[in-house]
Image 1 (cartoon, rainbow, N blue to C red):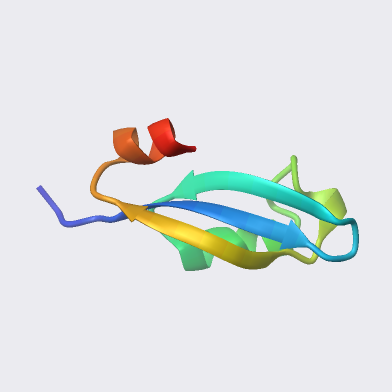
Image 2 (image 1 turned 135 degrees about the horizontal axis):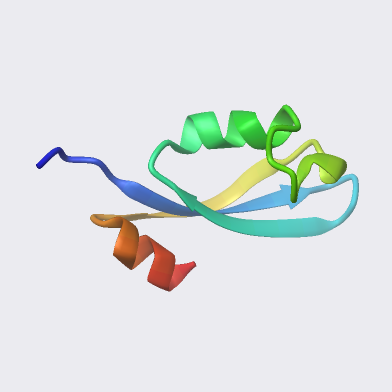
Length: 66
């Protein structure tokens, strides 16, 4: 079993005054995806800033928090 962390994160779009909550196991790549229009639900509201995240030991825990 590998030691992956899972993250629940909150993004904020200053341009549109919107927040978005998601979960991932690679927060840096996920933020990049959001800001490069690769996430359908957020691409209209770029750019996004990461304003908060929490770390979890399992995807199940992260999904419950999300």
